[in-house]
Length: 154
Image 1: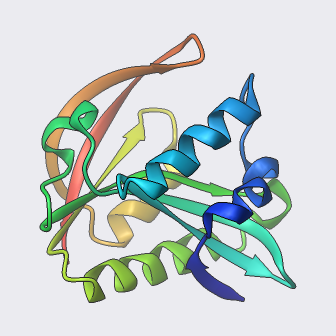
Image 2: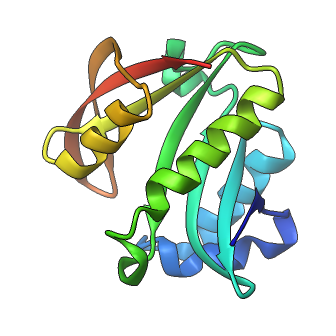
């Protein structure tokens, strides 16, 4: 398995991981944010197939103190294809991404997790996301959700 940052011209490889109303607009937005260095998308590949992605946000005003330029990044998403879930790949993959982000010189990483996502909460705590930052809320395509934001020192 390979862990790497996706290239803009490969953004379409992410399609199976995203269930959005207008995938073309969504992917174009992601590509634009990669170009502007707002975020990077790391992928986990098996046999040249993307089976998971982690979106790392470097600087996005929308997230406030979730990010601090050149110091703190935010894990916006961790997605694993359903047929690969429950095999420890998410933990392995996020650990690899943490190591790469640390190697780039970042000292902190934050992550948000919804209340009902108990598996993710367990994984994130196990990986050291134990410092509570705050409770927050958001919406995506009409769905409202609340979540806790936690931090890990790298």
